Length: 236
Image 1 (tube, one colour):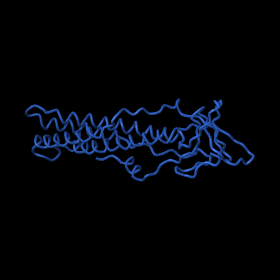
Image 2 (cartoon, rainbow, N blue to C red):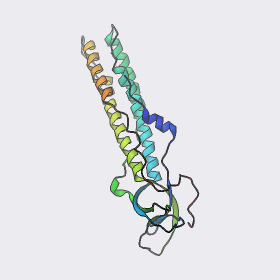
Image 3 (cartoon, rainbow, N blue to C red):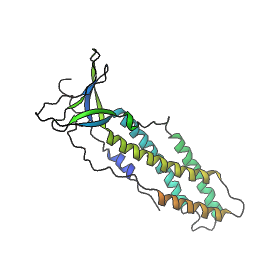
């Protein structure tokens, strides 16, 4: 029994969401871009996060995806533990060694610090004109105008990745719990076959409950978006 590996294939595909190139005043915090007005303004609220925040989350997602993949491989071996062997003790001991090696590798790849996912109430709010693409986020001017360009993404893209990250982290934690138990628990004499069956049942149940992360939702956001690395906004 195996589980789909959609998350890893999407990472390797290199498909990233589009970015908005905006200027931001380091004095008052005003944000925007410069697009020629077409005469018909249709502004609507838009929440965004910095591309740096997304990149940090994406890196953490790649780490936890690799962790889940390594642990899942051991769980799959547990699911067939002792299934067709006349020596369950030997099979159990061999898989214990494999489990301990995997746990060491996973621990070496742990996140160096606890990732704090940006909550929704901390998203930046701007106003997007659905006609020309003009973006505005006016603030009270402090008289010190220093504008610097930056890359931003729609909060919906960030929230989607955050949900996938949390789902993948829960999956990795569940796999690790079972692998850790097998790695350091040895049954009493005469109980090897029984222990193999018990771990096998747990592994099968865990693999059945593991679900792939949801596919990206249909893009119904509307409004023009510039790709990352595009030309700077005019007038900045």
